[in-house]
Amino acid sequence: MRKVYKKERDQIKDEIIQAFLPRAFIRRSSTFAAIAPKQGLILVNSASPKRAEDLLSTLREVIGTLPVRPLTVKVAPTATLTEWVTTQKPAADFFVLDECELRDTHEDGGIVRCKRQDLTSEEIQLHLSTGKVVTQLSLAWQDKLSFVLDDKMTVKRLKFEDLLQDQAEQDGGDDALGQQDASFTLMMLTFGDFLPALVEALGGEETPQGI
Image 1 (spheres, rainbow, N blue to C red):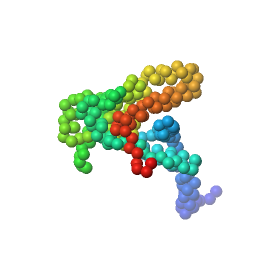
Image 2 (cartoon, rainbow, N blue to C red):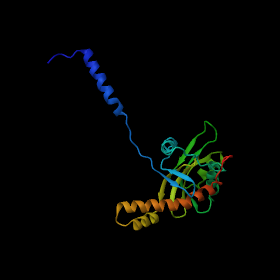
Image 3 (tube, rainbow, N blue to C red):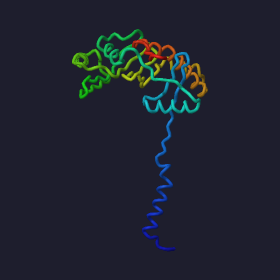
């Protein structure tokens, strides 16, 4: 047994840090996606543009090429959402719920976030009359699902209504894997009607020139 001097202690400390540093910041996460061939869409289960692009980049590496672009519409989503809240007349089969985000159009303007509030109220209409626009809005479609849509065309907090969930449970039977398959199948069938309706309600898809 011998005394360990400061220089040796520092060296040991550095070696330990270097050995464990690569493991210290490893973060594992999963991002799910689904392909809707009929609609020509890849649906990524993430509201983060970076995570969505990371997933698409991985797909490109695996298959060699993936010519995709973000979905855009002919009318700015803020204009459509603002009109829906102002008039309380959304597109057919869509219903305005009780949550929204209002932003001033000026760069240094304020932001108003409303939850569990009557969006037909005078307070909301006053904000709109002073120039604020709707940048996020909670909506329902038919009696099948509810969601929040923002000005970047991101669908958040998607929730299928109980009727669809009950149907998936019945279709899947008692087997957990069977229920998972049934839920996914029902989800994609619902998206097959919902997504075209949403794009049409927002003015139709804008296709860049040359495509």
